[in-house]
Image 1 (cartoon, rainbow, N blue to C red):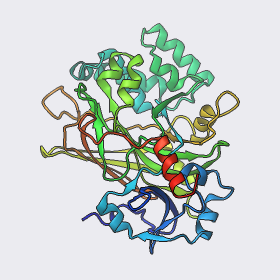
Image 2: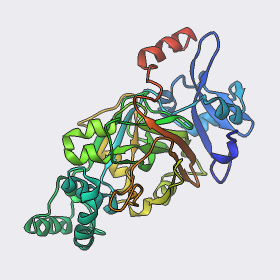
Image 3: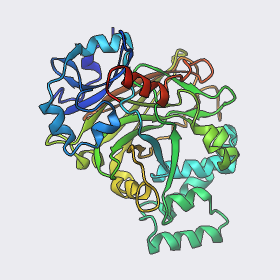
Length: 379
């Protein structure tokens, strides 16, 4: 049985943790909830959607002040699989190529045209060159412009380098609103993908005004072969059924946790396969090339608004390259892999890998949510 102690932050219930819980009954549907030491408490009367909750003047303070009805214990919620991704109407956005290590791998993907074996030789050839040119460079700075000039002279410039060290960040839509899966759910791979990996990331919860109100953990499942063949296949590489996991909850900013904690965080990843293969790594936020607030500013502003707020994946530095199926084959997922992402202040997000075509289909969208709220008199 899954126990709450296994997914909570190291400081237990000291923080303000909110999420979404599926509740059966006369009006089945998701409830916004607070995760407290005494159990899981309904916040629907305070904020019927997580989008509403993130737009409150003082989300953490109002959650603490609202008693709510106890729905169940957290252990029960985990055992029943009722804990959903902790976002609903928010757009699900992602920032790409925000760490130098993953930037090098993206260039390798592009040059290998999605071929994992070809990437092996390129990794040795290019890593040293790029390390010397781009490590520690501030994106958009004069030093970045000089590095760009030198790399162009060497014939090594890339669209990934443009967004990695250029003035404009890459911000894309990772998944549709309400399509993310939560703790314990299946995460999906496109059936045609033969080279893919998990991406352990911190995900910011941002209000409709652009205020960062909290953070969660996320898995931006990536198809390296699709995106490597063509950047125009990004949507096919990223947005598939069950290919976006967020959870187990949002930890709201309060006196116990804030943006400085996000910037200092280490996000660890462990993948364990049914074949006995295991890989682990870390995403060190101190090494991100663009500060989180600058990525939020690149997402929302005079040119682009999000009236329901958004969730923003901040990117990862960790791309597993260990050989799994033989020399030169690199890492790729296999069905049944258990992916565990954890960070001391944000807890643990765990999912099991399957094909997107085999994962439970996404059926509960915006219309279904509106109907559910109306049945409960909350529309």
